[in-house]
Image (tube, rainbow over all chains, first blue to last red; front, side, top):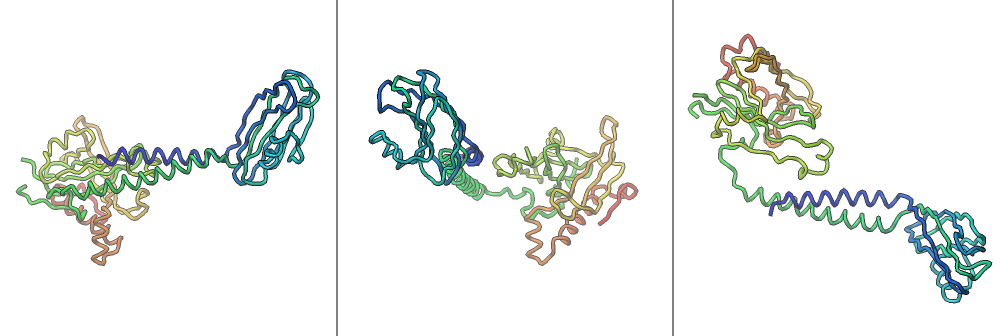
Length: 189
Length: 168
């Protein structure tokens, strides 16, 4: 097998890997529409995975159903408590209203949740959450790193294949002088 | 019958997308710059040689001279049409080192004035060989240029006397 396809694939993966790594530093923007069904205890959430630390900000708005909602930013432990009994004993950020803005620093590597549940009414509500997350995006970070690693391995394999192929090719006696010196031909040639 | 005089294994010429490597085959009638390797893109070159064209190798001792001359990638300079040949000492921005530049002004078959500018760039093998012999790089480059001069002098003969200028 020719080493060239391997090398080309390797370099493509390396380029994509670098793009992925660079992209992991870009802020992630998103809009999520949460449906909160009629009745107590229902909620909707957006899950945010954060590597190291970062910042999340955005806004929410009740777009149908009227009334207010409760909006929380919870870390994993807080979310676990909340999802168990619906009681928010602690939160990173809390706001009650028909709409509102949020901005919160995220301190460490973990999964965080943007949660909305019923406020002034238990009727069905639709809430639109728009958010922007600054910080390392773990998906692109891992994806980029994996592609980069595969690319590097393939590049090394390709180079070895090329070296083997080169070693296996017997040099032609009269090819360009391997020493690279200027060759004076015999006049009879 | 056309006679091979010498081969200068490597000269570099400027191309639109970066430097091009040529082998310079000198016969008793003409000098043929044979394209061996051309960078497809200087930037992509940083990614590795997979994205560059492979270096072609030719058996210059037996390759059909006419075939090399007719290849549109190659540049042919008929010796009788050389107006001026100057081997000039200078600096190559490609290799970032001292280099000898071969400047050839000639008239092509259509009667137009042409110029060829090529850097006499020794191969890494040559420089390594010279290093092993205790010859420093500057001297090795000079030796390479001196060999090239001898090759041209032999090929052009006495007719070169008034047309050639040597800085080596």
